[in-house]
Length: 627
Image (cartoon, rainbow, N blue to C red; front, side):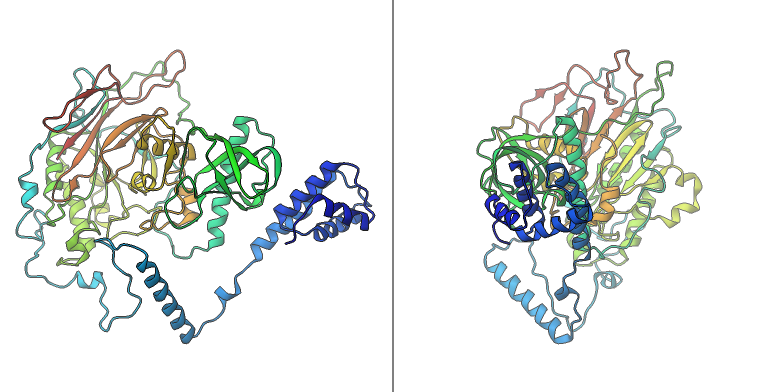
C-alpha cells in the first residue's frame, strides 16, 4: 500500500472535482485509509459510489462517519470472515506430508541448536515406532514389583522413606488473622444444611465433556477481539473517554489507544519488546511501545490496557499514562439480612494434589489427610487434583498394574468412605495433570459412575469444572487448579510498583476478569478459547479466590478478595501443606459497607521454620498446616 498523505488526497480530490472545505475531513480520510489498508484512489472510488447512491452527498466529517459504518466496516468484516488460506486447506498427498514432517524436524533441530536442554526436556518424536504401544495399554501389563493394594492404594511394597521420617508434622506454618478462641472443628453435624452450588446457571455451566482439537485461528482471533472491545468499553465509561485512536495513526497531539499487550518475539517479555495490538475496530495493527516515560507499570502478554501517549510517526507509541480497570462487583443475593440470625462459622478445608510422594505411589499423604478430616470434622472440603499425577515418574513409565481410571476411582471411593462418619461436603476439582481426565482448559468435571449407586453419599459430593465459581452458603469461591501464578510470574514485567509479584498477578486476574488472562498460554496448557470465553471468565469478584501453585503458600487480601494458595499436599518426597479457613456471612452493616466473609481479628502470627523470626500482620482468619 502506497503512503497516504493529505497532499495526495487533495490532488485526487481535484482530479475527481470533489470539493473539500475542511482540513479535518482530509485527516479523517487519512485515518480511514490506514485503518482499512486502502490506497487513496481506492477510498475515493468507494466514496464516489457511496455518494452517488445518496444523491451526491457533500464530503463532510459527518457524512464520512456514516460512510465508515455503512461501507468500510461491512467490507472489512465480510473480507475477514470469507478469507481462507488456500495453501493450508489444499489436498495433500503422502509425499507432501513427508516433506512437511521433514521440514518440521529440521526446524526443531535448528531451534534445539540455540537452546540449552533441561533435565526434563524431551524431543518430540515424529516418526512411527516399529511396535507402537500407548501408555494406557502399557498400564494394563503386570509388573512384579508393583502390586496395587486395595486397602491403601499402594502399588509399591516399600513406602516413601523421606515422607515417613518427615519433621514438623501438623505444625502451623502460616496464620492469617487471629480470632480469639477460634474453633477449628466443624459443627456438631458437619455438612448439614450447607448449600454448595455453582454460581452459573445450569444450562451455562460446564457439566460434561466436549469436543476439542477443532479450533481455528480465526475463532481464537474473534474471542481475543471481543475481549479487547468488552474491557475497552468498561475503561471508556470509567475514564469518560470519547473515542479511541488508531494505534498506527500518526498524530502530533496526545492520543488514547486501546489494545492487547504482546511480545515482539517468542522470548520473554521485557521493556524493549512490548507491542500493543489493537482490535479490528481500530485497525488491528501492531505498534511498538516505549515505556521510558511511565513511572510505574505492570504488564504481561494478553493484558488489555488503555494507553495515552504520542505517536508522531505512526511507528512507535511513547506511552505517558497507563489506565487500569476495576474488578467486577461482589456477588449479592439481594436479600436483606438485618433480621436474619447469623449462623456459626463454617470450617472449610482446602487441599491440592499430588496426594503421593514423588518416589512412591503409596497414598500415605492422602490417608493422613483423611485422618485429619475425621479428627477435625470440617463442614466442607475443597479437594483439587491431580489425584493420579501425570508427572509422577512411575505414571510416566506406566509401572502400574491397573488402569489410571481404576486407581482414580479407588482414590475417590476411599475419600468418600473414609469421611462417611463425618458427613462433610466434598468438592472435587480436576487438574490438567490428572492423567485419566480430559487434558483441556476449561476442564469438565470428573465423572463418578459408581457414586450414583449410593444416593446418600452422592448428595454430599459436588463435582465442579476447572475453573468455576462456587457458592457456599452465600459466600463465593473462585476455584482454578491451573498454576496461573507460576505461568504469569514467568512472563510479567514491572517497574516502580510497591506491591509484591503475587499481589500484582492476583490483581491482574481480578481487573482482567479472567481465571487465565495470559496469552499465549503456557506450553503445558491446552486452551479451547470458544469454551474459555463462556466458562473461563469471572462472573463476579469472588469473596475467596483459591489458586493452588507450586510456588510458596500464602494468603492475601487483594482488592477485598481473600486470595489463597494452600500449597501442595506433597512436595517431592516430603509432605507439603494444606489449608483451613473459617468463613461467616455476616448481616449487612448499617453504613452499607461490605464486610469480608472471612473472620477478622486484631493480630496474627506468621510461623516460619524453626530458628527464623516471626512477623505479625492483620488479616482475615486462615491457617495452613504441614502434612
